[in-house]
Image (cartoon, rainbow, N blue to C red; front, side):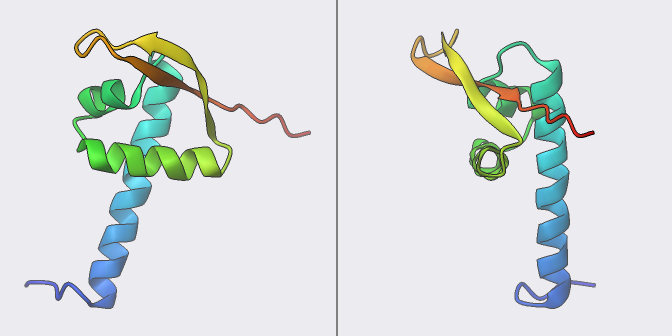
Amino acid sequence: MTVDALSVEAYQETESKREFQRTVILDTIAKAMHPSSADLARLTSLPRSSVTGRLKELENEGAIYKAGTKKDPFTKKTVHWYAVAWKVTC
C-alpha cells in the first residue's frame, strides 16, 4: 500500500520520523564528547539536513545549547559543539 504524500498517514509518518530523529540526536549528544552537527550526522547516519533541523528544534526548546567551539578534524573549520541542558525539577 502506498501512502499519498498529502494524507494524514503521511503527516503522522513524518512526525514519527522527526521524533525518532530528535531522540537519537539528543541521546548521541548526551553520550558523545563535544559533538558538532557534522559529528552528529556521522555518528547517527542521519542526513545532515535532518540533523540541523532537529538541532534547531532542540535548541529552541532549551533541551540543548551550543557549549563551545572546536576545530572540525575533517574540514579544519571552527564549529560549534552541543551539550544537553539538564533540567533539574523538584
